[in-house]
Image (cartoon, rainbow, N blue to C red; front, side, top):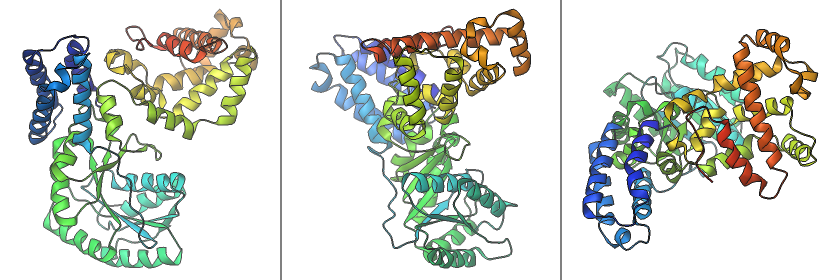
Length: 456
């Protein structure tokens, strides 16, 4: 996420970070480079101008020059202004209305409204313990209603049927009545999108909005469209009075223009961002955490939350006890770790949140993807129980058999075994004093050639 912007910022700010003295000339030069980095990330020009003005005002004042480490003080200013540009703090949903609290989903066609509706339902059910119903008022797009039904059933929410021969306003009336009857806490209305903002679309959604009186009106927008996302959001806000934005496909957005532009242009907060195709890939938008990711500082808080939510605590405790007793870490344990990693968004998702990732070459990051994780898991699945317990017996003929069973080659088997041995060494370090710190240092061995974790 935001790889290009993060890479540019890291290069620009690296030269200042260790300086004991910063001059006006240094600051002006750095700000010119920061400005270029933001424009290349497709951040809207008014946002760039405002950001540079604020950073410049603070950087040329006493805040930096009187600091004991001026380079670090400058980076801190950049970070805090990035946070301010994106909205200072996460703004959660306001669902205090008389049940059912209605959430109206709006946006252009192809932005991901239907999938985001199901993701939001799953989020509310799992984290807020709400009962959620969904209805589709999209009578124009072929199979739109069927698609919502499918994803609603997948997340375990209540689907309220509708049909393409009904009027959208009638669908919404009936859905509110049904949601009240079912005592649903929340009703999510998935509305029709168009390929562009048009009068017919706006008048229809205005009528639905007036009838439904939603507690939240969320604009769903594709982050890959950059600053255009902010301009479209503004057009919708003028018609609907949006309460917030869901930024989709943020995991594929290497630039970050939309995330940095929306709040400034619309005045509306980004409340969530979609981080993948899976129906649990929706994260609350925390500006301070995103700013840290952009500056290569990682997002340890989100990583901890992922671990808390997704890790099987009983299995983790069992493994910890096993390792502490000196019983060793075998290939079955390694396979279990790979499965747990996938549940947290895979290797790429975890790496995005680790500090120092801005210093890792892109080529190295590209190698650490979910295909690699799946391949390693397939190799372990091709082994016998004895081979998993005693990996040292895996030699020539066994390697050939395992590679054949996993649909790969001996070279990949050797790679997996090498990474397993590195993980094994890391686990051994957990036994001694300061074990966790030693293990984190050892993680650099897990990176592909050319990569490396930051020094601890």
